[in-house]
Image (cartoon, rainbow over all chains, first blue to last red; front, side, top):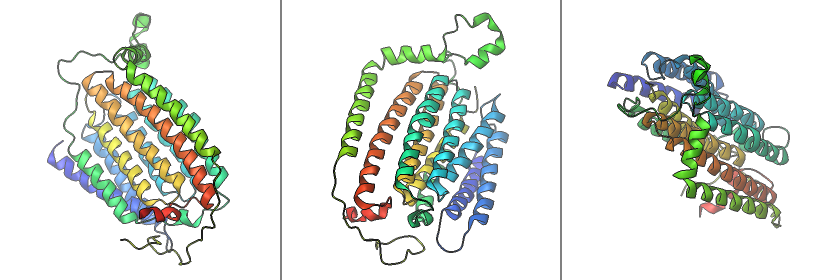
Length: 260
Length: 100
């Protein structure tokens, strides 16, 4: 990445940070319109930068830019929407867009697993808990964010540090193509090699069952422990405290407790 | 395949959005949804590096990442239900006594 490209990227990330800051739910005057303006400029700018500076993958750059745009837009909506149910629905959009980008990376098994696990299982659990816990309109604690300026600055500094220093990434020269071509790519070549085509699932399975077999067992054990933990947590009988709502009205920053 | 930098950039921005959401939203459920967005960013990065190095290891890491995400979601939702039963609200500020 040339210094000029990095500089443009920093400017766009700053605009994006400003847009996200303005879009965060707040008490008082709504700043959604300028937030949409700055955030939209940043989003379109980043996508155009990826496309014109050849930072998007060759051959599938158009698809990549579309899915990246959908993922980033939906992610902004997840963190900025005052109603949790809508946040969860937008999160499904993030998952679908990320899965599409994984397909472009020849990681079809992960992509399908992502859809099944996230959109199918985790999201349903989240929506259940939201339905269980949330009543009707947006709660006061959803309508104002806590220290949005500091949080957005910290987060986008991290993003700029990572994104501004990514070097030119191509397939390392001389390394053989280990990752098998995706089904779509093979289908374009004709059906000659489909039968003995190794396939993504097979290659991933071989790696999992040879190199990472211990880790795989540990992951299964971890899932078992988590299941027991979740059951124990939700069966626990707890005394209900008489927790007082804060008497002071919520301030602009939404803080009720003074900093140390 | 050239031009894999875009995946790193998009992954970093997704992580940043999740981090911003985790730090400044006050609803416990939204906070944990934000961590899931961070997981998505990391997953994209890991699988992109798998493509850079032409090794399947990155995709294997991605699968383990999904397992960790499922574990996190299960325990977190159990905790949220428990905390909601105690305080009757999802506001993270209601637990600010834990700041010490």
